Image (cartoon, rainbow, N blue to C red):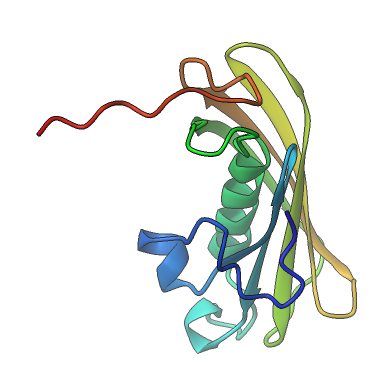
Length: 151
């Protein structure tokens, strides 16, 4: 599923921290997740460049999402980051960042994902690897039925 207009209406909407920093899931498909974000003053460090924590958060979230797209509507997949590596090679003070993550492999409990962060011109600013632990049954592309809610 891609969202060419950038509206992400049919995609998962972030809440909490990712929503607060303005992150948007713009492409979400099996083994791939793309998150984009406009850089603002809140994202900058003391030398007016994007803070390393912002790139780490984008790598973390895009990586995890590349492992949890579910091919069966209504089912869910879950994963939790257990290790993250963030290498910053460049930086910007404004513009739009794009974190493009792909699942590289895995088994029933662990998966490994790679992510590149680029600026609007396509310049590579950061790269990272994420290791995630799947929730029960989440290694399957069809996922599992969500838990029943108690009423």
